[in-house]
Image 1 (cartoon, rainbow, N blue to C red):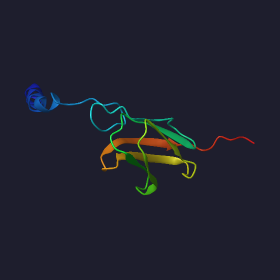
Image 2: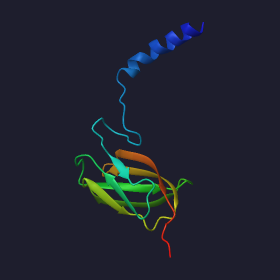
Image 3: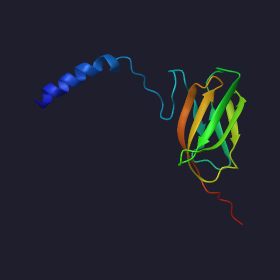
Image 4: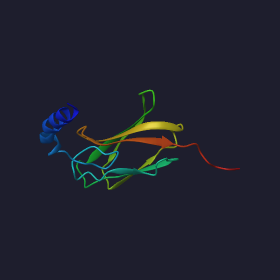
Amino acid sequence: MRSTILLFLLACAFPFAAHAQILPIGTIGNQNNNSYTYPNPFDNVLNVALPTQQTPMCRYEFVDSQGNVAYNAMVPWTSIVTINTSILPYGTYTFNFYTDMQVLVLKQTLLKRRSTHRR
């Protein structure tokens, strides 16, 4: 009985699986999407590496663990976008990166760590 159910599920899923894409962890978009952030965890600077320019401008946002937008901005699209994150308190954020037409390019969970400055 179990093998019959498994075969049925595999047969139903095959048409969808044949067209599936495998994307790097933390990315959303087309198969040419090579976007990623570094470092993670981050301190006061976060870099976003982007694929070839899709739009003149782009928008990013940091969403805190309560679902509130903690910080967002519009910036010109470049191959590396450097974001000053010194105003963000430490914690976990969902980072969303969009084209100026609101197409989601990258969604990733990031951690801002406590400052490690010693006196």
